[in-house]
Image: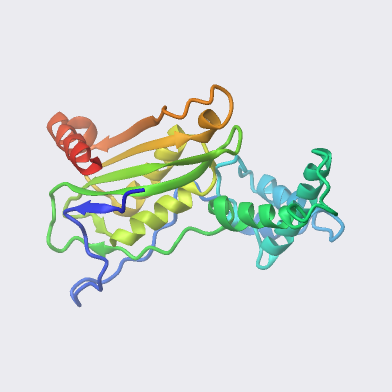
Amino acid sequence: MDDAKTIAPQADAEAPDTQRPAPAAEAPGTQHSAPAAEAPDAHEDEGTPLSVRIRARVERAQGRYFANDNIADFIREGELDGLQQEVESKMRGVLESLVIDIENDHNTQDTARRVAKMFIREVFSGRYQAPPPVTSFPNVAALNELMIVGPMTVRSACSHHLCPIIGRVWIGVMPNEHSNLIGLSKYARLMDWVLSRPQIQEEAVAQLADLLEDKLQPDGLAVVLEADHYCMHWRGVKDNQSKMVNSVMRGSFLRDSVLRREFLSLLQTNAR
């Protein structure tokens, strides 16, 4: 996969003394526990599966726990270990139902543990971990020219079959004098946080755009995602040539066709 390149980058280095970091904003779409998540109820019993207790907290706060939602606010310190153990136990049941000998087959004796760790700590970690901290800085230089970051490597999984989604994303930003500026690595961290969940590509791009728009407050924002879907490559029609490309255009990218063409033209050059 290509290394990420940048056009008109915003450096990740320390800001001059004249720039004071703004407090990190909350990520859109993050579920909030509020007092309801800490209040005891009938499900807060040690004999109740941890997943049931977490689900009850979300429901009590009238939250949502769709596949691509973040539920970190409802998970208490130390509970991820317990949730991972619960997934491991249920994964052993899945393997046994597939008539796989997990006791004597040396290749699968530890598979349930590995899969549980992979789901909770790695490929779906964007559901269970708080958003990455992002320090933003004021646009003291009043930058107002197009910036493009990418391509950045995307790794996710489709909500339908839990098959991998592998691709590239480009982000275009049109700042104004009131915009916040963040370091280049923060784009990748925020993108990974959103994509490290079971996703549908169209929804993933919109979630990422919402998050970046909230953090940056730009005049315009554009996100383009190109990806291979292994639910199509590996199963079903088994077509390994197809890709899906979709975009979200906000603000000046939506209103200004010249700016939009410039962005897309630079993407074509940068993608080669």
